[in-house]
Image (tube, rainbow, N blue to C red):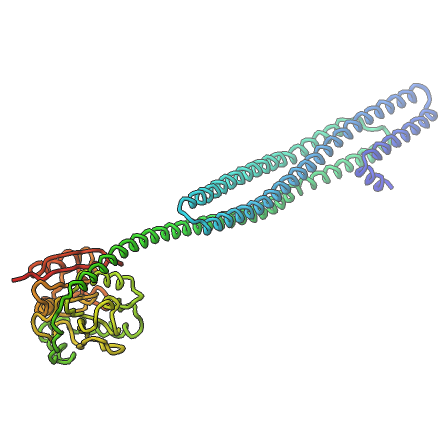
Length: 524
């Protein structure tokens, strides 16, 4: 019964006080009975001592009850405050994660709108606001990230303060326990056989209540650690979402910048095309005027002579090997590769209608060509695009490649180093992107000069690099610039090959770093 009463006393301070009052009443009744049994002064003295002990017990009991109530209130208040703070932190973190998700969605929509607007833009100036919008989004993301980091630092500081406050709680409880024990030890014991049992029971009750409080405080660090773990997990999720949003935005901005750059390149390309179109129009007008002028003059030229027999290609290659043995194998392999490429695609053959350079060269030929025309490297197509404005009876052509279909003009399958016509047989010689494929360049140029009449025109379409190694197949092993050539003409040496025998009439840029050059053979 006493244990049950003590248990109720521990769980209900109000009931504990009622029990103490009941105990006081019992002691009062016992004092009354003792008063009737004792006689005289001894009885009065004992009654007075009993009343003094009872008063002291009431005082100590009240003080202890007050201390315990304060201690319990302090612990409960600390736990409630911690729970409220942690709840607010978790709520704030949840709101922050929700806000980051919404922010990511809004930024994605803004970037999609910006990119759609960019794709529909018709001029270069409209791309600047789009780029500014992308920069603004990046700045906003940086600001948000700094705000989140600051909020996390504040939350971490609050948790540290709570841990420090809770770390001092066990010391406060221990000090309070010491004060309670000291007060019990200093109180006046009750002068009958029940007093020691009552005091021991009271101490046991206090110790039990203190143990409950200590257990509650001991659980606080674990609860704090668990809460911190949950917070860290949520913060990790938030950090991952923030990083994902940042990566998405940076990727989108990079894609937007790439589209802006591509759009700018497209505009640059359009400007170049407009410039080319203007140049082609002017060149075409000159070509048409030249054709009309020649038709009005009714110029009459001799017929093209019948070509003589030439050695076959294998015999000519053997002659190359005898003249310059060091590089003939590399040149022959490059020649075979080019021949195979011509069977697969027109990309290696620039004389077809779909090539802008061929149309450009056609107008150039119409301006400068005259009389009988020899096309060196006319290619395997039946009619080169740049010669379609000329009568076929005025055209002859040579090429080591057999034609896909018969040429409508006189044709001989041979290399440029061996031309099967007499001296001064042509008023015009054309070399369209083929001079960089010959093996013995000096011999090919000598043959061109031989068959061209004095005052005749040499029209060259060739790629020109700024500076290359002068080509000499006789001196040593040549370093090939690519699998299809032994050399590329360079501005530092190529034009010098013509300065002794020709006068430069016109030189203009074509497409893809190529040039169109018109020479006239010197007389005498």
